Image (cartoon, rainbow, N blue to C red; front, top):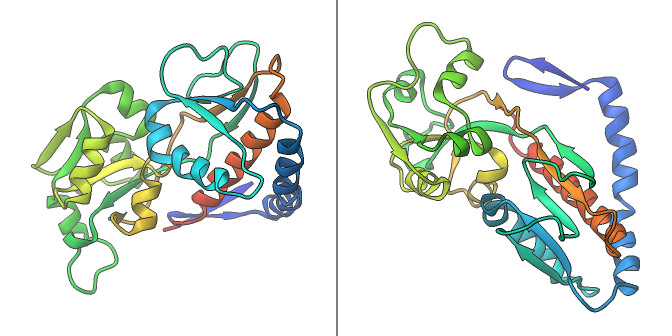
Length: 252
């Protein structure tokens, strides 16, 4: 579907054809969601979501959807049992549920625009090397929400220097790592889904060309025993479309 050109990726002819077909299908989603919402029972659609994904990516989109004239109502949980939810969003599929996957997320090296020199759009090689690297201290968080600086070095094919340099800062939560980067304390390596709001708001920018592909897909699981399964499926498709649009935002 894709071909690499330097550090960027471009659609192949087959990929472009699939993208055009997907766009036609997705164009019907809003109408479908409105039609289904007219026939839904009064109780809300129950979504169980990984707490970091819920905070950093899902909540703004649910707010936008609930603001529509034919507003759907959602109940969002980020803890407890997931098996009774209509839609589950996380990193592990639910047994017996229908699943969809978003596997195109990538990790960017991100920093505050305040640490760029005047006229720079990204850091120079030397500035990147000496800048403090912000690290996720929990292995599970690193595996789900970011990547290691060793993985960055391998992806960039760098043999001339260690990109981590001498200065590091380690945080036990994704939120602290993000805020440290926003406040100009260094460079953080996180998947775009997690940093999307800060990128859109300009609080963070790509610090250096290149990305690290993330090998842990986001999985959307639809409860096929739920009376809301059609609505959950439509919402999952819409969210996948939102993720795909997000991934086109920055190509370095």
